[in-house]
Image (cartoon, rainbow, N blue to C red; front, top):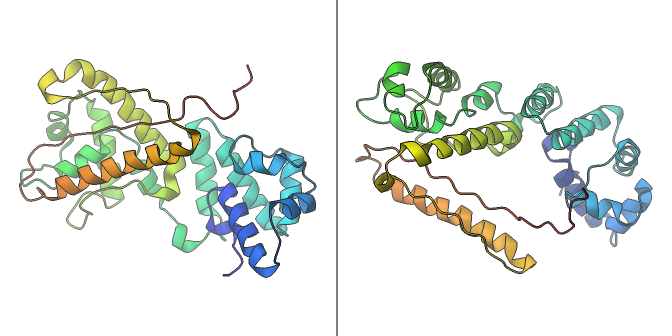
Amino acid sequence: MSTPSVFEFLDYRRFIEAWIEWKSTQRPGYGLGIFAMNAGLARATLPNVLGGRRHPNQETREGIARALHLDADEQVFLGLLVDLQRATNLDEQGQILREIFGHPRYAAGQRVETEVIEALTSWCSGTIVELSHQADFQADPEWIAARLRPETGLPEVAQALAALQDAGLVGDHAPHRVHTPSQVEHIAARRAHMAALDASKRALVEVPRPERSFHVVTISVPADVVPSVLAETQAFIARLRDLADGYRDEADTVMQVGLQAWRVVPEEPTPR
């Protein structure tokens, strides 16, 4: 196992965890306690940081960088990763992500082009990709817009189509289906999800009842079952994709399925 590099990650927590795991293979008995001591952190600080319940402030960040033996350039990059997680504004996240992608030491194998980020930010991007595989597809914004429901403005459709073409996601050599790359989950996926949620609210009104299905269920489970519930949602989407793949040569209708699940009550109530 080689030493993890901060430049291979987009989530600073995963980097810290990977580094501690690597260190434990070099030094038996090494773990969170020793790392926290080397970083000068209070006993509960590191578990809260790694658990996503808090982000490191400047002093904590410096201690973590010291325990990780990071050079100056690596410390700057770690700071970008922390800022990315702390950002609540999507435009701010996008700017930070571009700084990360533009860093000369960012792992080439992890790089995702800006065009891909932009191509996946409209709710109708996936629909355009699906339409592009149909025999009568026309790469014309007006043709596409006339087939979208809920109704979508021509400028948004034109922008989405152009971005998809620039990213190579629509055309002769485009992939069969678009999956949001994990490397851009902080901007592309969030933008696309928010746009899709807005579209689904309009679909509840604009789409006839026989052509839609909306459900909301709130459940209670043991805390250790939460990962299983989330895994079930991913498995369900995988089954839908497999179902659609079985009709690839016959497909003439595009559907959008949205599925959300989140822990409503956190482990520790948020102070108000």
